[in-house]
Image (cartoon, rainbow, N blue to C red; front, side):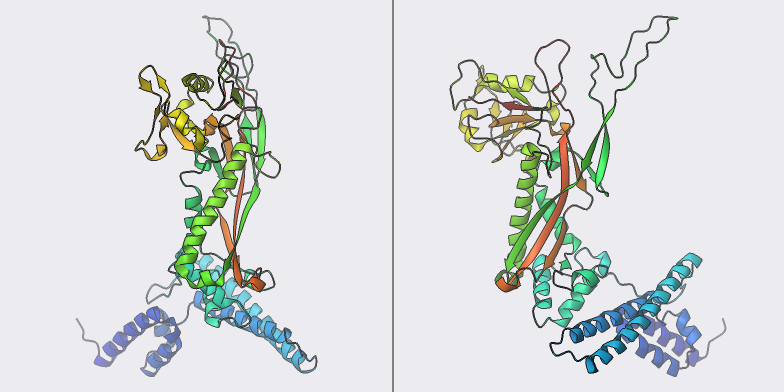
Length: 476
């Protein structure tokens, strides 16, 4: 192999080192390029080695310049003693510079699009990638650190470094969310997802429903309430040889669900903000609990006006009457068995019991013969309160008072349809809303709707007792 001159080998080694330096420290790019030119490497070689700024780097630089210029213009415009002659001229000069930057950004964006369309790529050399948007925490160690950064970015004298860090965390929304009287900052998605996961915890009813995530605002579902034994809808017939087939056709309707908005607004004092771990614990304890409670209440008892239509208030709920002569504040084994018999056949495997905590003492004494029908303290994760007639019992403050109608219900929520906005909870924060109280506002928005799939109970072919997805015990 032919030996290369020592100076050439030195130049290539220096260029390789420079490429690594630029990858690690993008700010050193210009200085490194100048050094390599002094070392005798021509611009074409530098481009091959990836030292020259790529289109993405150039676009970020232009956007940063524009943001700085806009902040300067905003500060100038906010002056109490704004002078039209002097300050007006300065503002006009800044406006001209801003127009030039916008034109340059437009050109750079067009070039990036054309390069991608033409398949232009750098084969050799170091490439510098901004991984900030790939990190679901946007570079923040925890929610408390994010909250402290928001606090530093607010006030009469905002911390410039904090503003820049928040801008980097949400570059696509900073321009219209972090400025103005009602502005705020988008919360990094990982922290939003943490809160959303907690709101779908053990007590949430949403995961038990027939849920569909949608990206739009509404969804239309086909609806068929015919039965195999009824005279309408799709039917099956025994067919004699050589006879014409009996025809049937589906009886289809439709249900349209439009999303409704559920919002939690949480003011947080700056004392809590300064203790990052405290604010994380505070919001993770409170926001999910509020969201879960309101969503569950609507799924069970919502009136359908600006919220879901509840499973236990619609015409599809079955109220199982008490035993003959049954006293108040009692439960009987017959109550439980009768409720199971009113559930649609095949739905028991999907059902849960929902009861007021005050019924627990009465449940623990129920037996069928010598066998208890309530087994407390089961180890299964889905039955932390115990198993009643083979299905999990969930004690809830949503249930009615002991002995009132609805103190115990048997629910197969697969018969309840919900739609939720894809992405779960949308979160944002603002330092302006409670400025006079020295507090930050955190906003959590969740969009949901739902209603029972069946509009009324089903009448079986050989019984006068109707059956449905939702059975609740009557007053005693």
